[in-house]
Image (spheres, rainbow, N blue to C red):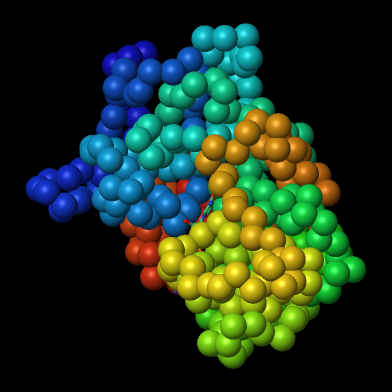
Length: 333
Ligand SMILES: NC(=O)c1ccc[n+]([C@@H]2O[C@H](COP(=O)([O-])OP(=O)(O)OC[C@H]3O[C@@H](n4cnc5c(N)ncnc54)[C@H](OP(=O)(O)O)[C@@H]3O)[C@@H](O)[C@H]2O)c1
């Protein structure tokens, strides 16, 4: 078994700050230590994977490396009683795909605690259409609800709406009866977003209009933001009294050019979302909801599929903000 080889993406630092990617063979014996060996059937592409694959040391310090922060497959060996061979499991977050060889390889070895038993109601493929992006969308909705945001509180804004987190957030919120306004930079994606459940689709500029002022007219009952920067600042300034805004991403900017007025004059809450170290209890709650009442109606419509060989093109597209929905990676021979 240790000498058994499998196919994986291998990212190498050929000279300082110069990275190459190829699909090659790795050995099971070279995988990191851990008590759970999984044969990966599906993974998915997230923005963070593209950063890891292009040598971003904020995500991955050591190369050669196999990215892939998501994986779903079958247990091959388990060193504890938690799982038995043949169990179907999914893994998102922790160190997978960062400095632990990830789901862009046909096998992973991880600590048992990172794995979640596949909830009934989801196939392995569906769990990876959802993946870290969908889990993050689910965690964002959970946090909004825990902060008291309700569908009767007015419109909910979703930024980066055609992206992985955004598209699934639109679907979940619409399914729960929220009136969802989707922000996108892709004018051609309006029909797609309406099919997912958005009641209105607006351009990024519409959110930013008037954002130079200390406060803006109240509009949003709550929001899911993946963009950060000026967009997040504008969203906070236009959130209604008592509303809440989740922050998970930085595709626009990691900065937050803000004042304190929305917090002290309107009681607006800014809710941080971390899907990586999310504790087990909310993790299981979100996955159960995603397999049940929150399961997006149009899951298949949000997904494209590629093989390991097809990943390169998708990595380039996600880095340019050109991906629509989710990309599942099929690792079966
Ligand atoms: N905190 C966590 O645990 C966590 C988990 C998952 C993801 N994330 C982060 O969340 C963010 C989104 O992830 P994702 O997987 O959804 O990425 P994605 O699929 O690439 O989607 C991001 C979307 O944001 C919009 N966008 C891109 N560049 C923009 C810009 N400069 N200004 C405004 N909008 C822009 C685009 O949508 P439109 O064209 O429709 O506007 C794009 O499709 C990333 O920063 C990611 O690292 C964080």
